[in-house]
Image (cartoon, rainbow, N blue to C red):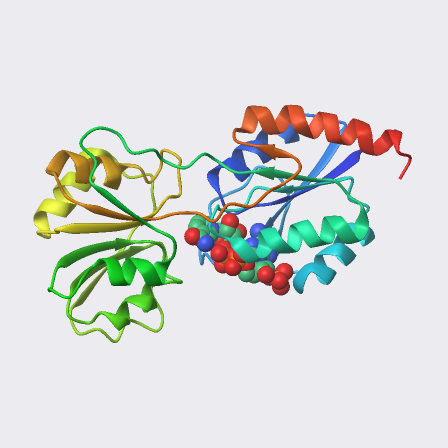
Length: 256
Ligand code: NAP
């Protein structure tokens, strides 16, 4: 019997974990797709293809030409464009789409969060008075903080911010998670940080800065996700495994 073919849109820990779990199944052929943003990506347990598809139409064409049976969007909660493309490509081709998106973090006692809807709103939330800001939102959107040059920024990212910010008082730190809470506390202390900016990414790997801010009594400006309705959603790798089986079975029944 032909193997069922799955394309996972990745770039997250969950995508790698799911790929590893599905790769144990000999009846499946799994490919993982990466955008190619990270200069030195982590090793992956399945064959990888790298780079954009050329929009929703390009992705739809790829799904057809590679006889994909199931598309899994396991990209980061803030990677909006590729998720929109995945929904459109599934609509164009009729190939089922499963969205794996980890839950966001919830505020607990001792947290002091300002929740905002966008990076631009996070810039405004910093206020007029100069502050020492830990900016840990990835390198792609850090440039937005040039609009508030009165603050000191410590910018942490996996790859260099290029071009760098034009704001005058910026330090850069290159590091890849996971980050331990104790290390995050030490980092915030050593740099006399007084506010943390983060996306509500969810997951364990980058929660350390949130726990560290709580422990030091520091405020966090948290950029929230926009709500999107997907037909088939999973929040964990386990749920995604179950839903993948269900979708593969239904797709075969329809005889597509
Ligand atoms: P994005 O804005 O949603 O996507 C921009 C374009 O990049 C897409 O239209 C697509 O190009 C290409 N692309 C994105 N993800 C892809 C994938 N997995 N495979 C092939 N092409 C992909 O994406 P982004 O926010 O730049 O994120 C890029 C990657 O980094 C994603 O894999 C995401 O999971 C990961 N990531 C993002 C964040 C974040 O905060 N945004 C954080 C951690 C990891 P075409 O239109 O040409 O197909």
